[in-house]
Length: 260
Image (cartoon, rainbow, N blue to C red; front, side, top):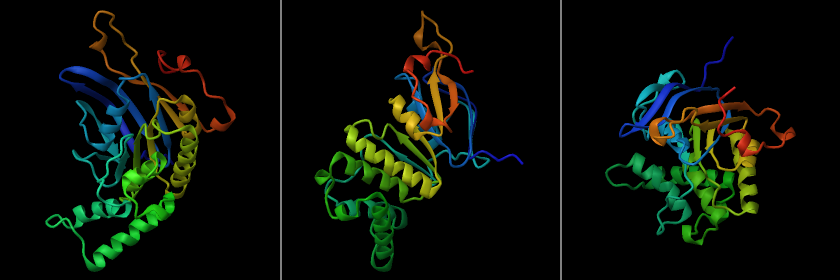
């Protein structure tokens, strides 16, 4: 019996002011896959994540989640973590995380009180325990290291318990040692929560280390007289079941070649 894909992308193209960024993107991803995404700068990787989030809408084609066409706006079942952090500097770690519930549950006042606030705090503290930030819950964002700030960004996404987690170069600005810690954290959360993950990275080694599937975005059609004439698509879709037993390839072996 075939398994229905978690995410299904069918003949998707995206244009900005008639300039093609992505074209003819087709992809089926089953629940629990960890898809790492690589490609040259400007080839539409981040645009693809925004399409999965519904922050952008396809110019043509459809994207389905569990067999249903994605709504035109982001929903809680899809979370995203950017490289740049989005927090309120005057609020503590815990207060920043509670704020999401306050905006969602109390649209008029933007505040929770009594039992509702206690429940939100309990949920936040459980999440902080998972990501190793519980001891820093009363600190302000400016008092956190880069790795701790990235943990906070991941916590913001996890609080909504997303089925699909989107990561746009989340570790690019971190030192190698902290980056290694974040890799272990992310893999642990992925296994524990059974999420489907899409992560953009410029680091080929990171892509092979973390992913169960590697997606390479590139252009397969080129016009030397008009470089922006064509958009990018998925040129390689590589299963990485044996990723720990294989060295990562050189980037030149992946970019600039058509999918097999």
